[in-house]
Length: 462
Image (cartoon, rainbow, N blue to C red; front, side, top):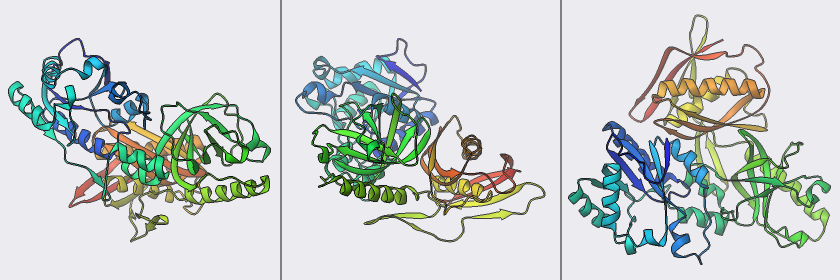
């Protein structure tokens, strides 16, 4: 994916299919619109592009309103790149920009980009006074020779998917699990680890204090079970967001206690993926009560993070959290002369990939009952067919397991698109107790989808 700061100097050599917006958070609704546009554009031999503005228009038009972002520009670009876009165009937003009529703005786009289709959401509008709504843009398109496609409202589990709704869940309720459902991934923030008062270390719970951009949205004050990310390696953590009322300093902080971790993190960048809220922030009468509560929080976080949704069964979100409904076995070992071969089934492609990974490590005696103590992020790009992507995914896991000295037992497939995959593998330090799998082969490889069910046949070199 190419990124342009301002219009490219040359007209694209192929027609452009474009969407316009802020796309803060890149939630499931954004992803659905972009995926549809990318598929349509590439099928027609065109380019799929996204136009966004910086700063956010509200920051220019209403600077008195505080605006907290769900994603940084870099985070947004990383997520968008995984969706198969050919380019992102970033334009500066000023009061002069806000005064441009919809007709003038669209005429410029058509001339500079060779616009064939404009894809927008149901509430989208641009131009002076938001005059360019869907009907106005469609009329302009008929005159200029481009088509306007309006995506319907997008709901997930009967909840409307909007950036404003994600913000409300995070800020008003601290409902990071429900926000993750709308985003399609856990909410994540990152910051540099700075020196703190070292109170946690004196209490036996050393914490990493994060310096986070004041423009990033932080969840409601409280204590959370999180995964802390040091590059691509994840560690279970208890995170406090708030003012630490037991110490009366009054300054908002984000501090993370990494479980079973004893390394110096000062000066490093640490990412936090928020999984579940444990409790609200509260004041304790004495240090003994505080320490007892921290121990309780730590035990609760261990339980939550030890069983992440891995899609090897059917996960249901209930009042008490996620529950796994285990059905019939999802993989069988096939007769093979020398190597190992399996057949795996799944209701979706994501479930199939998670199950294939679980099967591969189960054949190497990975213990699903073992406490999870580590995680690894996997990002794959460049594979376009399901079979090739499955082989790349499984081989990447084998490589990372060898490098980590780990056995993986649970898998979250956050996204599979026409260009790649984003996922997290969870596990524990260990090695195969008998024959280890060397690689996944293309021999007799088969991935099919029929009537909503996915099946794969995979052969392993041992």
